[in-house]
Length: 61
Image (tube, rainbow, N blue to C red; front, top):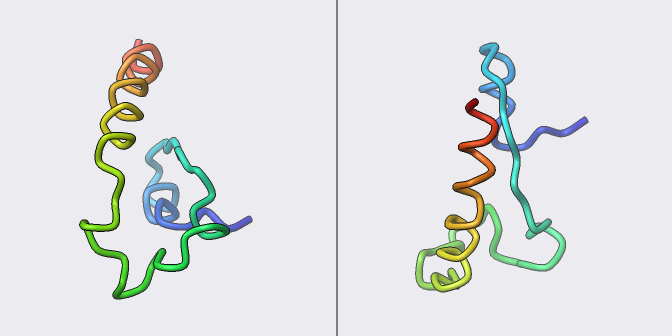
């Protein structure tokens, strides 16, 4: 199984949580030099982070 960017955390014994929209299948700039902040949809990213806040809080307890 490919754990992508968080494999190092798993290898070090830290639990991980991956949140993805499977960007590698629809976003040609993922993990390239063209993957720059100006290409991010900051409004959507803000909503996702706000939504995940409750999930993370629940997992922490």
